[in-house]
Picture 1 (cartoon, protein in one colour):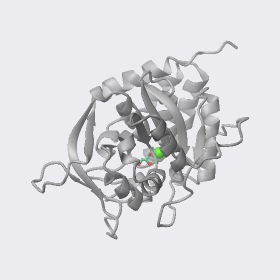
Picture 2 (picture 1 turned 135 degrees about the vertical axis):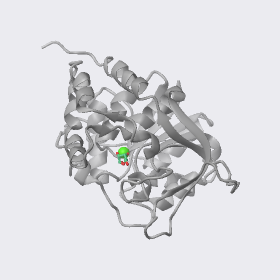
Picture 3 (picture 1 turned 30 degrees about the horizontal axis):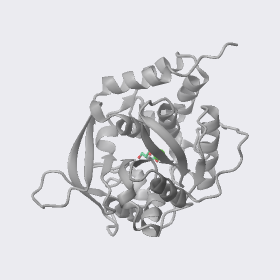
Length: 311
Ligand code: RIB
Ligand code: CA
């Protein structure tokens, strides 16, 4: 099993990703760290605490950055709802997060796991950027980083940039330059990991409270995407999570990746050298494709593991 920390900004698709991670046999989930992103840090942290309790994931939750390293915070409340959970209140008994801030917790776990720790980051990369700035020896203590973020081509927060990178471009470039292999699960792949309303209903029909939550929590985004002419929801974070567990149903290519931090119209673009002879160092992998049928089968297989409670 891989020791992993999930850094996230729940967030609807973060919530689905964590539902799946909780059942992935490949993971030893050590902790959740939260960051401002889709909504405020207060909300992403509240949602992470509630979600962990809702699915019986008994791991520490560490609060991280309330905004990007050098810029004003942007959010995606128009997509995820002002509470970040499409109006679903995951009330919970554990009111407090751990007393250690996320980047210190990442470092402490990295030291403890002596280079085996993998980070799965499905929100803005501020916590990871802070960790690398504060702890110069962290890179050699991490096995790899898998992110949902970026793209070799299109954007969603702007024509050039994907939201997680756009929200904190400087932190993202620090991560790509840190010397740890970064597996970029960008829009090239995640836009293909589309679940239709019929797929969602097949999950709900499994009958567990978690399966019904899965259906309920994505309805707002499905409505949002319908206005854009898309019938369904792009499973951005869940696809990155399944890639982190088992890359066999995905296609990833070695790449040199840097982030535009000075452009006005290109700010936050992950400039990716896949084919040129520019000789950029291959600091990571661009995950470009997914076997959608296998993706759906894996989602169903994992969601079947949640028990249907009598009554
Ligand atoms: O662009 C999609 C990403 O931005 C996802 O991680 C979603 O949760 C938002 O954070
Ligand atoms: Ca996210």
